[in-house]
Every structure is written in C-alpha cells, then in structure tokens.
Image (cartoon, rainbow, N blue to C red; front, top):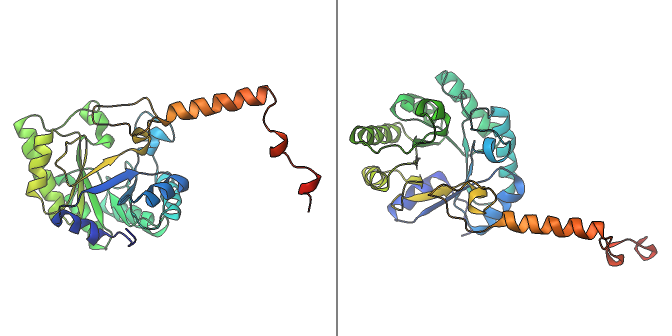
Length: 271
C-alpha cells in the first residue's frame, strides 16, 4: 500500500469489509517500523503511562507527554493515520478544554485525529470537536481512565442492562460524528451486535473477532512485558531476545572480547 491513509479511507474500509489494523506507537523508531510494515493506524495511546513511564494506570499522563510522543510518532511515519489519545482531564472539565487540547494535539504534535473515552455523556464534546474539523475516535466498554469508578479493569457488558447502555453509548458517539470507535473489554457477542448496528468502524481490543478492526499495545504484541491478559497474543518474545543479547554484551565486555581489533579505530582510519 503506497497511498496515505486518511479518515475517509478508514471509514470506507468497513463498507469494503476490509479489516482495519491498529497498533500503539510512542516513539520515532517504532512508528517508522510499524509504518513500513503496512499498519493502517498508529495510536499514540495514553497507555504510554504504563509501558513508557511505569505508572500503575493512565491517569497521571499529561498533555505535554501526549504532545511530545505524538510528535515523535508523526516524524516516523509516512502512510499510517495518526490518532492521539486525549489524556485524563484534558476534555472532562469543559468543552472549551476539550476543543483547546484536541487542537493542541493537531497543531503542535501533528495528530490527524484524537480519541476520547466515554459514551453518551461526552457526545456533545465529541460533536463540538468534530465541528471544528478534528476527527474523533470514540472508546467505550472498559475505559482505563475510569479505572477508579469501575473498581479495576473489568469486562463490561455482561448484564443485559449494561449491554443496552453500551449500544446506546455507541450510537450516541456515532451520531455525534465520530469516524470510528474502540470497543474494549466487551464480550464478543456484544461487540458483534454493536458492530452490526453502527455505520462507523469498530476497533476491538478484548472484544472478539467480529469488530471491523483490532488494536493491541505494541509492547504486548512483541512480548516485551510480563502483562498478558486473555485477549493478547504474543507475536514475538523480544524480552527474551533482549535479555540474552544484553547478557552476551556484558560477558564480552567483562572478558574484553568487545570491542575487537576490527571494531576499533586505527591509524588507517585517520583521514
């Protein structure tokens, strides 16, 4: 794929029944690798609070962090669509805050869309952001920014009334103008029902195989962390490879076999 991926293109993928691929990225080098691999969307997730900064949850993540990491990701990509998370309290206090901060992610960092967590309660905020021509991706179900209210990271939509609320929330976000919506931590049959009732794409994470696309945290996909919930598949085990490589490096430095003569500069290298 050689063309630049845009919001209208992503929306059209649902009509074509073409699966949408999404991965998180937080830095230039990883963004470049994922982009060259052909990923559709790079999500600069506030999950960077966990995997980059070591926080227990995403709540401490700031706008400044999101802007810096988004800008780095933007510099590393050529084709993928860049979506940036709106961090906790960057949009909840007022619509004015939401508009200002979404604008900062676009203007200062180069994001092409922003993602907000929430359903009907933030529909008007979504509408206002879309109204100034900033594309919005929604996010319902298990919402990491609501970890305290949910009492932990729990599957959402198991009960009939919870499922109805999820459908109502999804429709509210669609009607507000979002171009896509993330479904996280939702039973597969509920996610399928939501996907079928929406005209915009659904992106699943822990929501079964029937969403219009899937997203994973890149660190989980590559096996870089010990965290492995049921919905994660390790497509590589780089933590083992990295540990082995560092151990080899330590051993060779200790044994003074690195650097070798060939890896050292001599008189022949002087211009």
